[in-house]
Amino acid sequence: MNETLKCFFCSNPATSVAYYSKSYPDGSTLENPTFCCNTCFDSPRIVNQINPVRGGDEGVYRFLFSTIGKWTPKQIGYYCSQKAYQINHLSSRYWRKLIFRIHYIFQPIKSIGVVNDNSKGFIRERNV
Image (tube, rainbow, N blue to C red; front, top):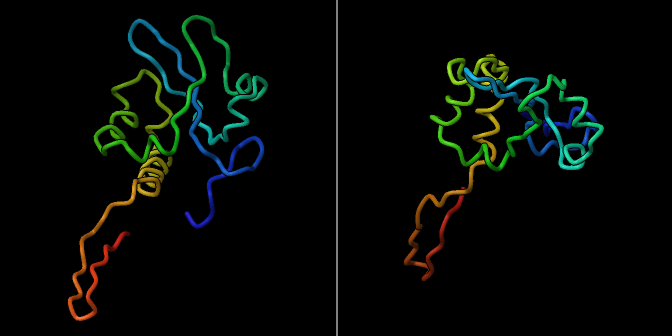
């Protein structure tokens, strides 16, 4: 992903994956995933475009990119699986790859180790 992910509605940099979800007695759905920025997600007009309004216990929710970065691969597998939901549009190969890419891009920075250089008399820590 050489360029940043863009919001589907305003072309600003996206900060989350917005989706429609409805609860049924047999399970819930995860439909119509869309890249969305904070301002568009807070707009009722945009939320109404994502929400097909079928009645019942439903709504538009989102996964923040920073939250996806903290997930384990097992959690990503759960959200991208066919068995966890009645309808899951994140289970397609395209969305699964995008979710894993977002996960690896937004992971917190980890310290690799300490480089000890006694000849110069200092210790420095290297971050990735």
